[in-house]
Image 1 (cartoon, rainbow, N blue to C red):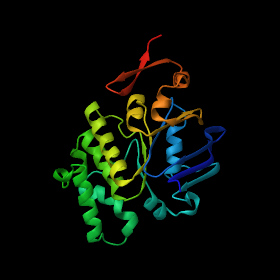
Image 2: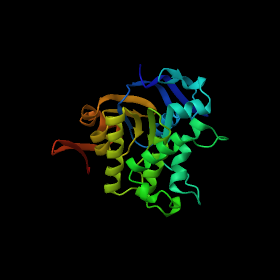
Image 3: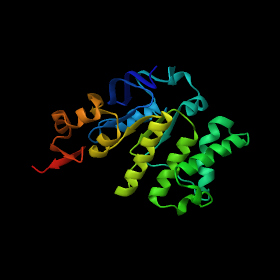
Image 4: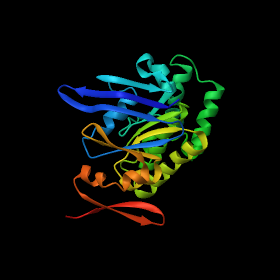
Length: 257
């Protein structure tokens, strides 16, 4: 059974079609990244999978269950989200923010259990956030804050995680640290990741599979190395791209006209 199944999915806003007849299946324990130029429909696609966008046609299933048949709590137990611009409330500690991920399991009106607390502590430890646990969230650096937002999603204990440009605003070191943390979760925990990334080099290095979207449609779908080296990639971005091998890794270099 696929972890994520999209069948003839379309999303329209007014007369504009943002996602156009996309059929896609992602196997469990796979990292799939959606790439494409601005306006390709990447964010709309992952928001639909996370249940934040109303679909116009087609279906989305998580672990064999249709998203349309889930209530909010059921969906939160199936799929977690790391948004591009998360809301971070003032006056909340890092521990309490990460613990919000457990709400889907104990409910809004019941206290967290000892097991919930243990899961939160485990996530804080895995993300090297224990030393910041009692800090106000607004005092964190950009990299620390992104790890905290990832921690909230991890605390949901879902097997499917959706991330929309999770490294936006981070410097190179923090970008790599966050992506390495995710890669470890995929390898060790069997997490299924559906992400969007603008950086084609990092997308190719970390994802098992790349889906190239343009004007809402799937143009290419395959192994990361194959998609990165396809001439179609440059055509979609309307520019010349060169792929250079650096210590066995593909580096995508834009070439000036």
